Amino acid sequence: MNAELDGTVGPLLAHRARAAGVVLTGCDGDQPGVQANLLRFVKGLGVTPLVAGNIKGLQDEYRTPTTQKAFAEKWGQDPYMVTSFADGTKISFEQAIVANAFGLTVPKRGMNGWDHEGHVDELTGRYDVDELREKGGIVDYVVKSKPSPGVFVLGTHDDPKQRHYLNLYKLGEGPLYSFYTPYHLCHFEVPNSVVRAVDFADAALAPPAARRWTSSPRRSRP
Image (cartoon, rainbow, N blue to C red):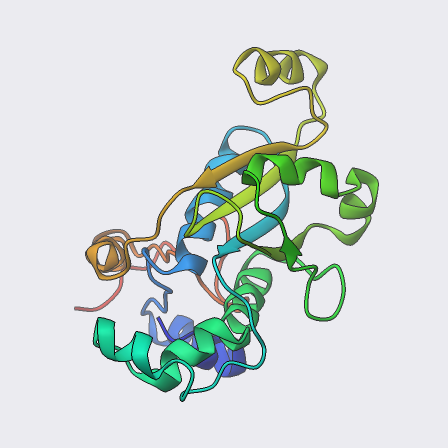
């Protein structure tokens, strides 16, 4: 669950893990891991993911451990850690490792970071599909959208018949369709990552030196 480590030396660690026959993985329950699961789900439907996003309740670049002290004390957290959540540091690393793992990029330096108080489904109108395709898909985030906290994926489908059924199933007329997970349950979901790695040699989220869409055939060591 250390996005900073993953974003800095993750590819090197993944290369060494692969050489040693072990699994390096991000965690279910942390936003990058939840996005990874949603990306695989969307791709499994035949939809092409073009935006992988994080939903934030707050973004203020001027937050400090002093301003976050009361919040940290209330929830038994470290003020420096919660400051990284509020000032944009954490989300930059988290979206970077999602981009690395799935071959995505950013729309611009720092991402768009939309300020949108409506539902995340409404973000489908914020993007140009052709631009997203040209970039090969992007990572992004939104502040104040519902449901929060959570993650979202926006994707498209090239088959007219399947677009018809996506519309029938209340996902709209496209060309972008919205999928989201309305929570991330942190330590409650971590055991899932352990089982995936130990029993199936499958990474919830892996840096680019590891396989992305398919799990490794090699089993991890206990």
